[in-house]
Image (cartoon, rainbow, N blue to C red; front, side, top):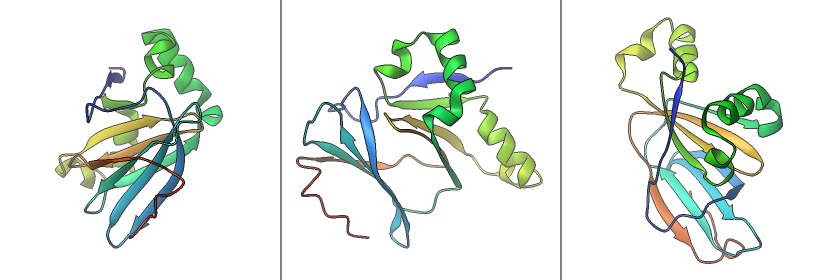
Length: 144
């Protein structure tokens, strides 16, 4: 069965497109900072307060096959005008299962995907993160 991608609205005040400004894996959790597109000073700070199971960050040009799959299955606007997704029947989680000798199957993991202007971020996690709107991305200090 093929992957199923669903647009995900984790919070109401969400922009259509973002670019990645920071990815931080620290003792305080796993953090992602995104800036809004179109020279908007606003951004989004995503915090996974505990460890995540896995993360893959790839330049979107290096995921050309996945991009073509998404265009073919859902149309270009599906991901060009949206950034947050949940993936079921995930090839990424299947790969993690194989790599872990099926150990990861015992966890209740979900595949969250972020498609930004510069990368595709795949996250395997058993819980949803917290989101904080940033008024001015240039003034935002990451405290971890």
